[in-house]
Length: 279
Image (tube, rainbow, N blue to C red; front, side, top):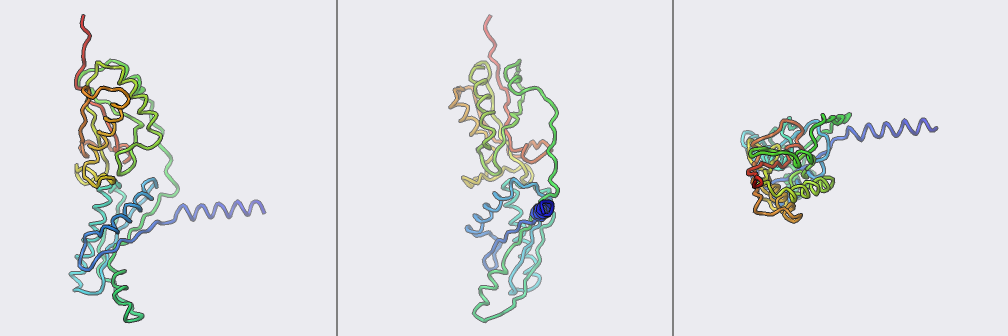
């Protein structure tokens, strides 16, 4: 009996692990701009999938049965493209988006004449299908590097760029994940004591089209890399690092690292000046 229960649990976990996540976005007649309420629903869905190891994402656009076949095919593709743009603007890795297709019209299956308007409204949509990786990828074992604290305490020169490892931001936002706060506290303490260092804080984003900046989900502005740099700037200032020693700048997506997307949601410190002690 015990073995049977274990087997049932394993089968349930297997089925759950492979389960697709789906979402639908609805549009107004002849429009491919995403309505505000639908955009808010879409951002909630992105929050649900941002910590999932994703195998692929499929985006399919549809229209109602009005309009010519050619018109509906173009409009449905525009709707699918609009959803992909939102994914990119919100730091969802484009490499896993394998299908962005306009499927044209959905024929109406009329049950009652009074339902026609409602049915057509439900057919003006984009379907999003997210397939998780199964089995989940094992986490990479990082090679040992020089400790960040040792680097900051050691000998530095103008032009040195220091990646603040383990400072990870929540997808689409300018604030750190919870586990990163203690790391930033240690960095702040070191930099507060090292009054000889002047530096620029450079903020970065991941996964946008080209080298564009991402949209800050909190403010709805396309300046997320700048907001991340300012977040670190303000945090360090509160911890005793003098503001006149610091500057901050948004680097957009000019320098992706080429690894996991979360590693591009980062900040780096560029040493701009070293005050040498007087003899």
